[in-house]
Image (cartoon, rainbow, N blue to C red):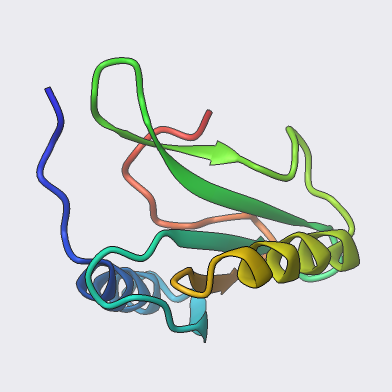
Length: 112
């Protein structure tokens, strides 16, 4: 059974606030569609590489996150190229970046 979804803008604002409360630097890189835009989440390891996460529907119907950039942190230039390609195809995307050398992100949903 699918879980109800928050509007994209509300989720992004709440997640930025949640990161700030946890002492993480989080900022909006690209504003997408207020209601239904997909969120790309860049976890910037500050010199240790970055990860790109995007939401997916898990087998149980709940929300999960997929490591679009692969299982390990990747070069930041590669991640930036991935983001740019996605934005060229879909201007409704939201891009949120979190900077943390420990790769913290404050997501409750599983990362696959």
